[in-house]
Image 1: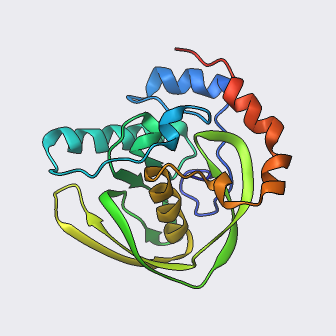
Image 2: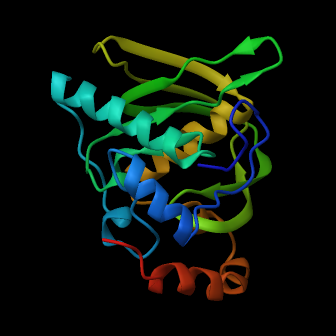
Image 3: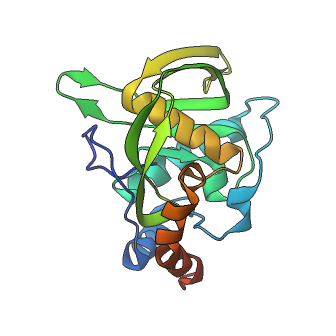
Length: 199
């Protein structure tokens, strides 16, 4: 999800260029999938049982997120794995500390209001857009121990949850902007799609 300096809650766009991608591939346990990769358009499958393998995947996703240096959320589909798993770490703000969130099979139960804010995506580097989303949400899922989780939130966490759950459904943030705005981003999207990245 959006770019920020770690330990800040002010989110804008992800900026993972080709040089950054080389470093990411050398340091991260998992590799990001970028715009144009068909896996980003596929719907992830529910996780039937949270095994040690699923827990290890969550840890590797967090390590990959931290290796980007500016991400605050990641969905399993973004690393080419079609499982309904997201991880989020929005850092800390003043005296408030936010623990990393690992959520299996997340589902939005209720929404309220709407708000527009800038978004970006680690899978669509250097592209940002204003996206309208519900302001408050209620989400259910399971934590890394397999316990049921019920989250009522707003602000940045609500936006990141919605962004990452969209990924699990094959939806990108650029799908939530107007056709005209997407047309204006056409060249940038084409560049990302055609970029040669290290194998």
